[in-house]
Length: 338
Image 1: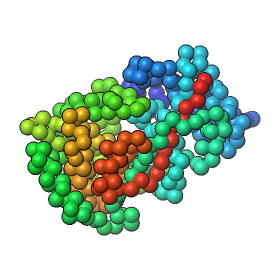
Image 2 (image 1 turned 30 degrees about the vertical axis):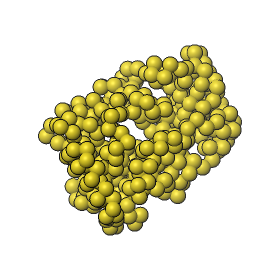
Image 3 (image 1 turned 135 degrees about the horizontal axis):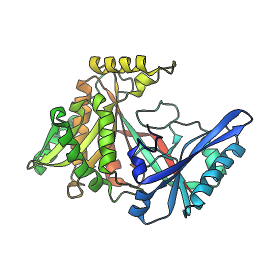
Image 4 (image 1 turned 60 degrees about the horizontal axis):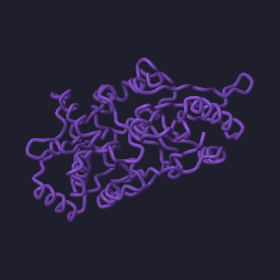
């Protein structure tokens, strides 16, 4: 469904071409060239993208793939190729350049170390680094309590702002999704590389997430009855999928549903934290992180990954550091003239 031009709503504002590199009768690499009209309208640029890059450790293979993608983008008037992004910054994006010793969390890519050399050898240079944080108990076995001083600080901030926090209401799921829509694009519109998500894309994503959502770790911040921020945390489903070597999905889906019911998934990921612009810089991010941290532990999730965060987003990076999260992975987006 992800690659389908008819089923993925991304293709309502974009197009892509897929390329395979073959040597004899063997596939040795792949790449997608991506034209995202919504990105170009948002940033008034001529940046195209590459994604879904996989290749053997062979510069000739990588160079041929990048040139195929570049030629496709060049023919459509683009002057820059950026990536990896599969398909956009709203999907899996960035090349892992630090933190190879830990497995990937939900919706995060993981690649061999040599990919950086292949990409940089093909003429790409760094465009931006994306920082990923971890927090909680590294053994996944016990609750790592928030320091008392942070507990007090969060309480003071909530009282000072007159903010109330509540969990996602699964009985009102469609309306909750509409509330997220109202915040999502406003919350990220000034971020480097940001691409707004259409209503159809958010509905599509919500439909995929709904069966695995733990409502208690999806907090909404309200001020006078109005939602002004939200956080999205999900159980790290990769801990179940990682053990599937058979290629058959039915057994692993049953195992996943059993793990969710029994609360045996010990890891969570926070992919999104959105706050309306007028409430930023007031500590609301810490309030939301605190809610997720403490509520996730009540469901047996003692470790969490947060991110990614742009390397030059001081407010969000500072908020995570205050909550005792630490950077443990770095992803990189690259640019190259086409």
